[in-house]
Length: 309
Image (tube, rainbow, N blue to C red):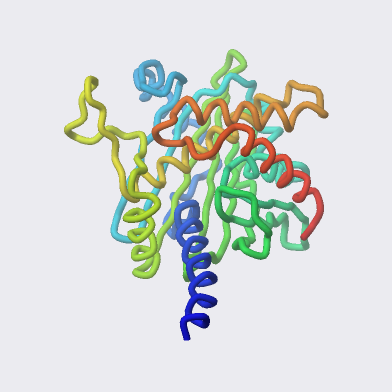
């Protein structure tokens, strides 16, 4: 009986770790705001309203982050100025032909993205994305989501792109990553990333378990009400969780854009180096693995995602 119990305990424990990890990185929301094609003016107004926050913050870059939590929903938003021309940003992220594959090159930078492959079907572009742990692993031990890639709005000065997946682990559904951007001149672009997810009772219980165990010491970026400059204190729990991953995806977008100026054969290494260096600027929130381990893992995963699996 003891031998049987031990043989069962290992797979159960590994399954629980995977489930908790997936819930920590999944991005879903059944009520992400819908943007209209004329929202360029609204995004420009938001840029003007955030002038002070973009110029003076603890991030060391022109960036503003906020998050929200309800009984069944989490959402993180980042507004940032990126020093790339609008045409560069738009051409990389909302190109109906090359955009899906470019997004795979963005998503694979995240520690928990183990595979991403883009394909075109009669209904549009699909991204097959596998999520897993922060270490190298076989795809068979990860969870696959099917993201629909949609260009919602595209113009010479504004675009919006959505990645949506209908279902995920533990009965979750309606996954979303939303990016919109507007040209603000002087070879700069104002970008808004929304990363959000909703959950039911099972999802809430699993996240609570994660945050009470392997995620117990994790925090986000927003200061708590009693935080001071001398003694900063940051939100934890599920808000901290969504803030960390919102930042990771934003830094992946920025790293991808920054590497476009490098020769094609140097871009992967540049993206990986830039992303890792950027996350290490916020070690309390984002440090997870050593540089050498990250570079090797992601180089292997990038090679794997070049073919459909």
